[in-house]
Image (cartoon, rainbow, N blue to C red):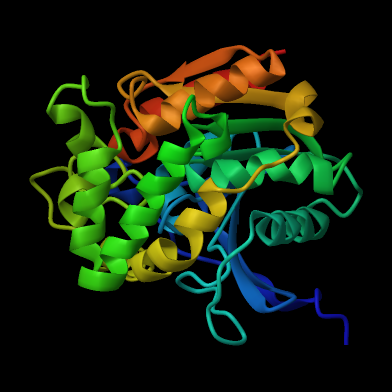
Length: 327
């Protein structure tokens, strides 16, 4: 049996558009979900809208749910595909969890594009933080499959002024996780992610730089209910799923992805480099600026910080729309 065949047909879901009165939605906002069997896992994926294909990869410990609001908004122009990366949430591995490879994740994206774009039309690809490393790797591994690549703050340590310091930082985060757990790891990241001259509020802003927002953080964004509303059961389940992915991220994704050296020139012609307006002094944004210089690309400023897509999804999505449509 072909290991890449789809194992479940798409099904309509009653996914109400966030921010819409009474949950009103139209056909483009209704998600279609499916399972795609690939080597070593089965990928849960969600699709909205019609038009050219846009694949949005979640970073850190996030899954497809991080893009619910953005995907709904962009579904008026694109077929927007989101998914749970292998080993996360609803995409369990067939065997034990081991260190993950950006190359393998790029192959997963290519298989998803092949499923959703069977005529061979190229897709646009968006990645943020750790998934932006995958976005940089994909063009070299799968030439001709991508029309546009947007990499938002990829934390590639080789692009830093002091790569050894970057590697030491992420190693320290993983060591803290191994010794004392998730809270210790995120505290270590908060204390060391920004240069010393950054204001005290800087590191805390990205303490969750490579993890999903907490329920409290998400409750202030348009992705979640307004402060007068309680989270829905679906939203609560989403937060719990993403938080449960943190051990896999901290142990098996953070160091392999940040230490990866993608073929940057393969992506140069299609690449847009994203940097958060409020995070430009922080390590991932410094790496992104280094990437832009390396490939002689411009920098597209996005609203918010490193996790701007969760801080204000709809404003972030509007900026992404502009970047995708820019020639």
